[in-house]
Image: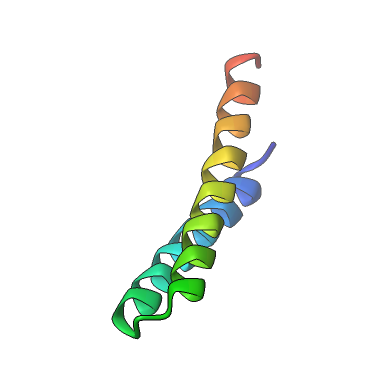
Length: 56
């Protein structure tokens, strides 16, 4: 995969961190959980990218 996919994954991770922090700040557990889920998705995608890069 290309650089654009890596950038999208990083952006999703950052957005998840922001969403989680906002959820914590406003005591909104649902929003906090969504932020954590977004970060997890981004990390899984990034791990897949790293595996693909290892086999190039």
